[in-house]
Amino acid sequence: MQVPKVQSATVEILVDNFFDIFEPSRPGVVERVVLGRLPKPLLAAHGLAMLLTLNQNGKQARILIDTGNSPLSFFNNLEAMGHGLNDFDALFISHGHPDHYGGLLELLQRRGPGLPVYLHQDCYFPKLLVTPRGRVGPFALEREKLVAGGAQLHENQGPALLQDLALLTGTVETTTPYEKPLPGFKRIVQGNEEPDPFSDEQALVLDVAGKGLVVIGGCCHPGIINMTKYAQKLTGVSQVAAIIGGFHLTAGGDDLINGTIGGLKELGADLVLAGHCTGFKALTKMAVELPENFMVSCVGTKVTI
Ligand SMILES: [Fe+2]
Ligand SMILES: [Fe+2]
Image 1 (cartoon, rainbow, N blue to C red):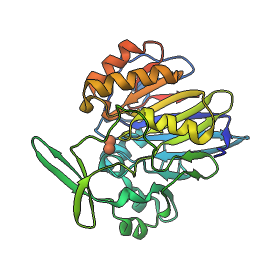
Image 2 (tube, helix red, strand yellow; image 1 turned 90 degrees about the vertical axis):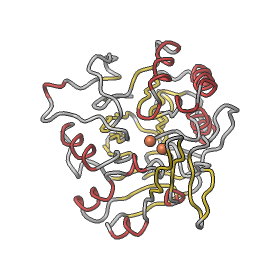
Image 3 (tube, rainbow, N blue to C red; image 1 turned 180 degrees about the vertical axis):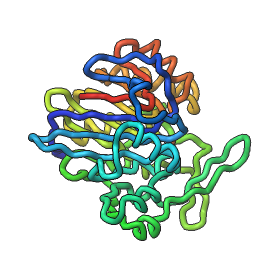
Image 4 (cartoon, protein in one colour; image 1 turned 120 degrees about the vertical axis):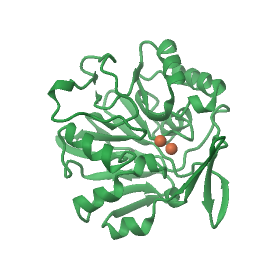
Protein backbone atom coordinates (compact mmCIF):
# COMPACT_ATOMS: atom_id res chain seq x y z
CA MET A 1 0.00 0.00 0.00
CA GLN A 2 1.45 3.34 -1.04
CA VAL A 3 1.82 5.60 1.99
CA PRO A 4 2.41 9.26 1.13
CA LYS A 5 5.79 10.46 2.34
CA VAL A 6 6.18 13.29 4.80
CA GLN A 7 9.37 15.34 4.95
CA SER A 8 9.47 15.55 8.73
CA ALA A 9 7.46 14.63 11.79
CA THR A 10 7.41 15.66 15.42
CA VAL A 11 5.73 13.66 18.14
CA GLU A 12 4.90 15.38 21.45
CA ILE A 13 3.97 13.18 24.39
CA LEU A 14 0.99 14.89 26.04
CA VAL A 15 -0.11 12.16 28.47
CA ASP A 16 2.01 9.23 29.66
CA ASN A 17 2.64 7.26 32.83
CA PHE A 18 6.05 8.75 33.44
CA PHE A 19 7.69 11.98 34.27
CA ASP A 20 11.39 12.01 35.13
CA ILE A 21 13.30 15.25 34.83
CA PHE A 22 16.60 13.34 34.78
CA GLU A 23 15.89 11.33 31.63
CA PRO A 24 18.43 12.45 29.03
CA SER A 25 17.71 14.20 25.74
CA ARG A 26 19.23 13.34 22.38
CA PRO A 27 19.97 16.74 20.82
CA GLY A 28 17.93 17.37 17.68
CA VAL A 29 15.93 14.14 18.09
CA VAL A 30 14.54 13.78 21.61
CA GLU A 31 14.01 16.92 23.66
CA ARG A 32 12.71 16.90 27.21
CA VAL A 33 10.57 19.63 28.66
CA VAL A 34 12.14 22.29 30.91
CA LEU A 35 9.82 22.45 33.90
CA GLY A 36 10.35 26.08 34.90
CA ARG A 37 9.36 27.27 31.44
CA LEU A 38 5.88 25.70 31.40
CA PRO A 39 2.74 27.73 32.07
CA LYS A 40 1.53 25.03 34.50
CA PRO A 41 2.74 21.66 35.85
CA LEU A 42 2.43 18.48 33.78
CA LEU A 43 0.56 15.48 35.17
CA ALA A 44 1.72 11.89 34.68
CA ALA A 45 -1.17 9.42 34.49
CA HIS A 46 -1.87 5.85 33.39
CA GLY A 47 -2.88 6.76 29.85
CA LEU A 48 -1.54 8.01 26.56
CA ALA A 49 -1.97 11.00 24.27
CA MET A 50 0.42 12.38 21.65
CA LEU A 51 0.39 15.24 19.20
CA LEU A 52 1.89 14.65 15.76
CA THR A 53 2.99 17.52 13.57
CA LEU A 54 3.73 16.55 9.98
CA ASN A 55 5.34 18.51 7.19
CA GLN A 56 4.35 17.33 3.75
CA ASN A 57 5.41 19.27 0.67
CA GLY A 58 5.50 22.56 2.54
CA LYS A 59 2.15 22.05 4.27
CA GLN A 60 1.76 21.39 7.98
CA ALA A 61 -0.82 18.99 9.43
CA ARG A 62 -1.49 17.96 13.00
CA ILE A 63 -2.94 14.70 14.26
CA LEU A 64 -3.86 13.95 17.85
CA ILE A 65 -3.31 10.33 18.89
CA ASP A 66 -5.49 9.24 21.85
CA THR A 67 -6.82 11.49 24.59
CA GLY A 68 -5.32 10.17 27.84
CA ASN A 69 -7.19 8.47 30.64
CA SER A 70 -9.29 11.45 31.72
CA PRO A 71 -10.17 15.04 30.86
CA LEU A 72 -8.03 16.05 33.87
CA SER A 73 -4.72 14.79 32.47
CA PHE A 74 -5.52 15.51 28.85
CA PHE A 75 -6.63 19.16 29.06
CA ASN A 76 -4.12 20.04 31.77
CA ASN A 77 -1.19 18.75 29.74
CA LEU A 78 -2.44 20.09 26.40
CA GLU A 79 -2.44 23.55 27.99
CA ALA A 80 0.85 23.01 29.84
CA MET A 81 2.49 22.13 26.51
CA GLY A 82 1.20 25.36 25.01
CA HIS A 83 -1.52 23.89 22.79
CA GLY A 84 -5.15 24.78 22.29
CA LEU A 85 -8.28 22.83 21.36
CA ASN A 86 -7.91 23.64 17.67
CA ASP A 87 -4.27 22.67 17.36
CA PHE A 88 -5.06 19.44 15.49
CA ASP A 89 -6.94 18.55 12.32
CA ALA A 90 -7.88 14.96 13.16
CA LEU A 91 -7.87 12.44 15.98
CA PHE A 92 -6.78 8.79 15.88
CA ILE A 93 -7.91 6.46 18.68
CA SER A 94 -5.42 3.57 18.87
CA HIS A 95 -7.78 1.02 20.46
CA GLY A 96 -10.85 0.69 22.64
CA HIS A 97 -9.35 0.97 26.14
CA PRO A 98 -10.47 3.84 28.36
CA ASP A 99 -6.95 5.02 29.22
CA HIS A 100 -6.76 6.08 25.54
CA TYR A 101 -10.18 7.65 25.02
CA GLY A 102 -10.65 9.15 28.52
CA GLY A 103 -10.73 12.76 27.35
CA LEU A 104 -12.60 12.15 24.11
CA LEU A 105 -16.20 13.01 24.96
CA GLU A 106 -15.22 16.22 26.72
CA LEU A 107 -12.94 17.10 23.80
CA LEU A 108 -15.86 16.78 21.38
CA GLN A 109 -18.02 18.87 23.69
CA ARG A 110 -15.45 21.64 24.09
CA ARG A 111 -14.33 21.73 20.48
CA GLY A 112 -17.72 21.48 18.78
CA PRO A 113 -18.84 19.31 15.86
CA GLY A 114 -16.78 18.26 12.88
CA LEU A 115 -13.60 16.71 14.32
CA PRO A 116 -12.52 13.79 12.09
CA VAL A 117 -12.04 10.75 14.35
CA TYR A 118 -10.26 7.68 12.96
CA LEU A 119 -10.64 4.34 14.71
CA HIS A 120 -11.12 0.62 14.10
CA GLN A 121 -14.74 -0.50 14.03
CA ASP A 122 -14.05 -3.09 16.79
CA CYS A 123 -13.20 -0.33 19.30
CA TYR A 124 -16.86 -0.24 20.33
CA PHE A 125 -16.96 -3.72 21.90
CA PRO A 126 -17.17 -3.35 25.71
CA LYS A 127 -13.87 -4.33 27.32
CA LEU A 128 -12.98 -5.69 30.73
CA LEU A 129 -10.02 -6.98 32.64
CA VAL A 130 -10.03 -10.05 34.87
CA THR A 131 -7.25 -9.80 37.46
CA PRO A 132 -6.28 -11.75 40.59
CA ARG A 133 -7.82 -8.83 42.52
CA GLY A 134 -11.15 -9.07 40.69
CA ARG A 135 -12.88 -7.83 37.57
CA VAL A 136 -12.42 -4.32 36.21
CA GLY A 137 -15.02 -2.93 33.82
CA PRO A 138 -16.70 -3.40 31.45
CA PHE A 139 -15.95 -0.07 29.82
CA ALA A 140 -17.33 0.90 26.44
CA LEU A 141 -16.62 3.61 23.91
CA GLU A 142 -20.17 4.28 22.76
CA ARG A 143 -20.57 5.10 19.09
CA GLU A 144 -23.85 6.98 19.68
CA LYS A 145 -22.10 9.35 22.07
CA LEU A 146 -19.41 10.11 19.49
CA VAL A 147 -22.05 10.79 16.86
CA ALA A 148 -24.04 12.94 19.32
CA GLY A 149 -20.82 14.84 20.10
CA GLY A 150 -20.44 15.70 16.42
CA ALA A 151 -17.48 13.43 15.64
CA GLN A 152 -16.92 12.84 11.94
CA LEU A 153 -16.25 9.10 12.16
CA HIS A 154 -13.81 7.24 9.90
CA GLU A 155 -14.01 3.57 10.87
CA ASN A 156 -11.80 0.93 9.32
CA GLN A 157 -11.12 -2.76 9.64
CA GLY A 158 -8.24 -3.29 7.23
CA PRO A 159 -5.46 -0.89 6.22
CA ALA A 160 -6.58 2.69 5.57
CA LEU A 161 -5.05 6.10 5.02
CA LEU A 162 -5.52 8.96 7.45
CA GLN A 163 -5.95 12.07 5.31
CA ASP A 164 -3.22 11.09 2.83
CA LEU A 165 -0.69 11.58 5.63
CA ALA A 166 -0.39 8.32 7.54
CA LEU A 167 -1.21 4.64 7.25
CA LEU A 168 -3.49 2.96 9.76
CA THR A 169 -2.65 -0.73 9.67
CA GLY A 170 -6.11 -2.05 10.52
CA THR A 171 -6.20 -5.37 12.42
CA VAL A 172 -2.58 -6.43 12.85
CA GLU A 173 -1.30 -9.60 11.26
CA THR A 174 0.46 -11.54 14.01
CA THR A 175 3.58 -13.49 13.11
CA THR A 176 5.90 -13.72 16.13
CA PRO A 177 5.66 -16.74 18.47
CA TYR A 178 6.14 -14.71 21.68
CA GLU A 179 3.46 -12.01 21.22
CA LYS A 180 0.06 -13.40 22.25
CA PRO A 181 -2.99 -11.63 23.71
CA LEU A 182 -2.74 -11.73 27.53
CA PRO A 183 -5.43 -13.91 29.10
CA GLY A 184 -6.86 -11.34 31.53
CA PHE A 185 -8.17 -9.10 28.76
CA LYS A 186 -11.78 -9.75 27.67
CA ARG A 187 -14.33 -8.17 25.39
CA ILE A 188 -18.08 -8.59 25.16
CA VAL A 189 -19.54 -9.51 21.77
CA GLN A 190 -23.32 -9.91 21.48
CA GLY A 191 -23.61 -10.43 25.23
CA ASN A 192 -20.86 -13.03 25.41
CA GLU A 193 -17.58 -12.50 27.23
CA GLU A 194 -14.61 -13.76 25.22
CA PRO A 195 -10.81 -13.43 25.24
CA ASP A 196 -9.92 -10.15 23.56
CA PRO A 197 -8.03 -10.82 20.30
CA PHE A 198 -7.30 -7.07 20.06
CA SER A 199 -8.55 -6.88 16.51
CA ASP A 200 -9.32 -3.22 17.33
CA GLU A 201 -5.74 -2.10 17.94
CA GLN A 202 -3.83 -0.72 15.00
CA ALA A 203 -0.60 1.17 14.51
CA LEU A 204 -0.30 4.60 12.93
CA VAL A 205 2.58 4.51 10.46
CA LEU A 206 4.46 7.39 8.83
CA ASP A 207 6.96 7.18 5.99
CA VAL A 208 9.47 9.97 6.57
CA ALA A 209 11.53 10.75 3.47
CA GLY A 210 15.13 9.63 3.82
CA LYS A 211 14.54 8.22 7.31
CA GLY A 212 12.07 5.33 7.02
CA LEU A 213 9.01 4.29 8.95
CA VAL A 214 7.77 5.73 12.20
CA VAL A 215 5.52 3.17 13.89
CA ILE A 216 3.30 4.44 16.71
CA GLY A 217 1.29 2.11 18.93
CA GLY A 218 -1.03 2.83 21.86
CA CYS A 219 -0.75 -0.23 24.12
CA CYS A 220 0.60 -2.58 21.42
CA HIS A 221 -1.57 -5.45 22.66
CA PRO A 222 -1.04 -7.28 19.31
CA GLY A 223 2.72 -6.93 19.96
CA ILE A 224 5.03 -4.10 18.90
CA ILE A 225 7.14 -6.44 16.76
CA ASN A 226 4.03 -7.79 15.00
CA MET A 227 2.84 -4.23 14.43
CA THR A 228 6.17 -3.05 13.02
CA LYS A 229 6.62 -6.10 10.79
CA TYR A 230 3.09 -5.67 9.48
CA ALA A 231 3.80 -1.99 8.77
CA GLN A 232 6.89 -3.05 6.80
CA LYS A 233 4.85 -5.58 4.84
CA LEU A 234 2.04 -3.14 4.03
CA THR A 235 4.33 -0.31 2.96
CA GLY A 236 7.15 -2.31 1.37
CA VAL A 237 9.56 -0.10 3.35
CA SER A 238 12.03 -1.99 5.54
CA GLN A 239 13.95 0.87 7.14
CA VAL A 240 12.55 1.84 10.54
CA ALA A 241 13.36 5.28 11.93
CA ALA A 242 11.40 5.10 15.17
CA ILE A 243 9.10 2.86 17.19
CA ILE A 244 7.04 4.77 19.73
CA GLY A 245 4.33 3.87 22.25
CA GLY A 246 3.29 1.77 25.19
CA PHE A 247 4.56 -1.78 24.61
CA HIS A 248 2.71 -3.66 27.36
CA LEU A 249 5.59 -6.01 28.16
CA THR A 250 6.12 -6.45 31.90
CA ALA A 251 2.64 -7.92 32.34
CA GLY A 252 3.54 -10.58 29.74
CA GLY A 253 6.57 -11.92 31.64
CA ASP A 254 10.17 -12.63 30.71
CA ASP A 255 9.50 -14.57 27.48
CA LEU A 256 7.61 -11.60 26.05
CA ILE A 257 10.18 -9.07 27.28
CA ASN A 258 13.16 -11.04 25.94
CA GLY A 259 11.47 -11.95 22.65
CA THR A 260 10.52 -8.34 22.05
CA ILE A 261 14.03 -7.06 22.82
CA GLY A 262 15.39 -9.59 20.32
CA GLY A 263 12.83 -8.41 17.77
CA LEU A 264 13.75 -4.76 18.35
CA LYS A 265 17.43 -5.55 17.82
CA GLU A 266 16.60 -7.22 14.50
CA LEU A 267 14.43 -4.32 13.35
CA GLY A 268 17.28 -1.91 14.10
CA ALA A 269 15.20 1.24 14.58
CA ASP A 270 17.23 4.38 15.19
CA LEU A 271 14.97 5.24 18.12
CA VAL A 272 12.82 3.09 20.41
CA LEU A 273 10.74 5.36 22.66
CA ALA A 274 8.67 3.31 25.08
CA GLY A 275 6.43 4.38 27.93
CA HIS A 276 2.85 4.09 29.17
CA CYS A 277 2.00 0.40 29.82
CA THR A 278 5.47 -0.98 28.96
CA GLY A 279 6.23 -1.55 32.65
CA PHE A 280 9.27 -0.64 34.75
CA LYS A 281 10.97 -4.03 34.52
CA ALA A 282 10.78 -4.11 30.72
CA LEU A 283 11.90 -0.48 30.44
CA THR A 284 14.98 -1.10 32.56
CA LYS A 285 15.85 -4.23 30.60
CA MET A 286 15.51 -2.38 27.28
CA ALA A 287 17.70 0.41 28.67
CA VAL A 288 20.45 -2.17 29.29
CA GLU A 289 19.97 -4.22 26.10
CA LEU A 290 19.43 -1.35 23.64
CA PRO A 291 21.69 1.39 25.07
CA GLU A 292 22.13 3.27 21.79
CA ASN A 293 18.51 3.31 20.63
CA PHE A 294 16.20 3.12 23.62
CA MET A 295 14.73 6.10 25.48
CA VAL A 296 11.92 6.41 28.02
CA SER A 297 8.79 8.21 26.87
CA CYS A 298 7.92 10.86 29.46
CA VAL A 299 5.19 13.47 29.53
CA GLY A 300 6.51 16.52 27.67
CA THR A 301 9.00 14.62 25.50
CA LYS A 302 9.26 15.92 21.94
CA VAL A 303 10.65 13.69 19.21
CA THR A 304 11.73 15.05 15.82
CA ILE A 305 12.22 12.73 12.86
FE1 LIG B 1 -3.11 1.66 27.56
FE1 LIG C 1 -4.82 -1.01 26.17
